[in-house]
Length: 298
Ligand code: MN
Ligand code: MN
Image 1: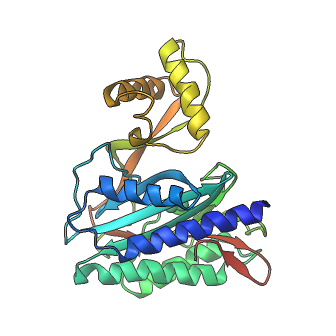
Image 2 (image 1 turned 120 degrees about the horizontal axis):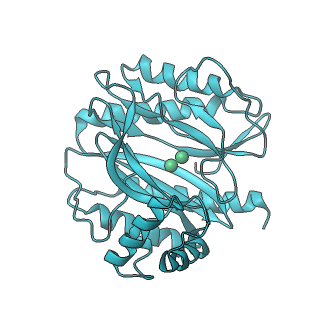
């Protein structure tokens, strides 16, 4: 399989599971069931989750995944961002949808989709990243909402989700780069209401992890654990739910804590809107070329 075919397969799986998640009625369902069922669907279709499904509610913009047996349930007033990653041979599709059942939040959800569509239209090879940011921001502002200015899209590399290049959600001043052909990028507008701060801050909860260093920690048990994690996930993010086959939950948490303290493992904090206002998100992965942009997750 060429790298392009791998991107294609990952994208097709990601978009199918996203559309199923979009249509489902999630009220009364636990975030645990949502994560586990989407990840199972990805595997059934021949893909591998590239990161734990993110199920971020309301003012949490990103980086919440279900804990083992998480009892948190979706309520009818909630707005839920479901962010899905699929990898095939390390080539990643990253896509997200926001679901809500309260008509009052529908416009917030729709504006994120509109901003994404407008961004996709201008994202060709050689398009400047700040031009994409400008299109996203103007679409959001025109409809009376506010972009989250410190969250952005990103380049993707094999086994690497955030591969160095950022695609802003606002018109940035200063250095910009041009999109390259045959390079994958995720574009992901985040939108809040006009009374939101338009900035996210790190919250206390951390339930997504990834390996940042394989340097031995001098704790033998932790080092063996680190090797096991490396064999399973390499540099890709994982959740406690994904490692309870290696150790029971308390032990797994204890060893992760050791590895986080030794800086072998990074713990991602949840990202919370500054004024605690609602946040919506939409995301696609695309590979630009000069006259055509291939949206792998369409
Ligand atoms: Mn994503
Ligand atoms: Mn992304």
